[in-house]
Picture 1: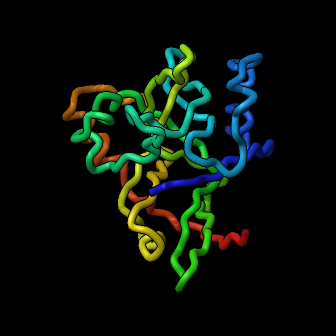
Picture 2: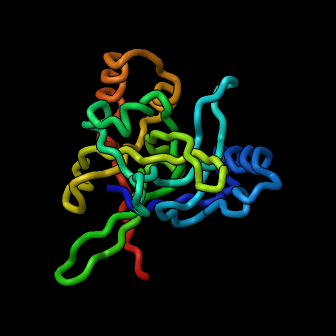
Length: 209
């Protein structure tokens, strides 16, 4: 699974700068902007995501985690292999988003303890994880988008650490993930093509807390 990830406001990375500028414009004067989380991201926090719009791509604020009716817990991950089998995800299969990150966290078992690890592609300072989103009501007539991060089988580096990993999209698949339209057959082909373990080398850093 993916239970935490990292997003940092690096002014040297043009994409990050553009995402944050757009969010500042769009949410200026709203409580959502005050609650926007940057840094180590936890479930239920409000964070930047990228969605499709009439003009192309648009950055917005979304909550990490879909609600579960009658429960306080949220759904933070969706398995790539069963997206079209589970109604929770099938009904929003056309509402896809890019979740920007500079790394994600996993914990590796070591005897009686766990070692926190920060994992990121070696050749990319910013990457996007595949997500699905929907609009939710926060209970006070306030609406916001909420999303899940899609997970897949681990690649060779993650396999000794965990049996799942987030889908880190190839650069050439980012627009396809956002904009592809069609029936279930087309969606199934899209998912089979795009939602695969990351093929490149990954940098794994031990984090001491």
